[in-house]
Length: 255
Ligand SMILES: [Zn+2]
Image (tube, rainbow, N blue to C red; front, side):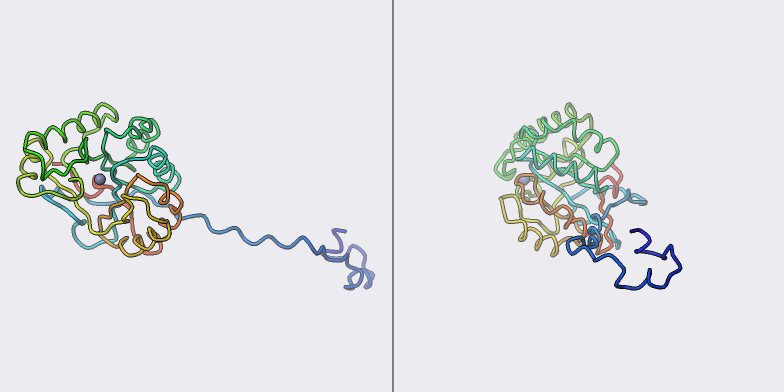
């Protein structure tokens, strides 16, 4: 049978004629090529800049960097899925965590190797996720310091100087209270996946297409499952645009 598919063993001309070939199997078709694997990312080769020592909402200068920052952590499964995505793809993410949410304790061992290799950075989103404008200075500092202790004890890393005020709500007084305990850089954003509450994955992807742009800091949330179903698409958007994912530590030196 093999001979019928290639050069005939016999030199007799009939052996190679089409009507002597076995009928084509009507079921077996050539397999379609598998879809290309989702893109992967390497570590950036960057010359770091000094921390600006004040509020940031984007990355400095011209370039092709994008910083995906992921807040809260209402779902341990979503936290773990982000970690798997990073491990599989090389993706780099800065988490702004509320350590009071149990997922950050439950998934600590999953996150540890990615924190160690620099793909994940842990930053401070306060312990209670309160509107800092409603707290006095001492309460602002306590909310940051409780979370700071948790981060240090759980992950063995320093979160300072980066904090994200819950809801993006802050002013000069809040910033001064935070700066007095070393949190000198409030990190805002320039574009959101808008998934602090649950939204459908296709809507989330629309926001991703709108905001995953050069030198943007984009905010997402580890609260609801839909984002975990579109990680390959997010990676494709980033790759198609020639963007390099970065953490804040990839871009700035700590003061
Ligand atoms: Zn938040």
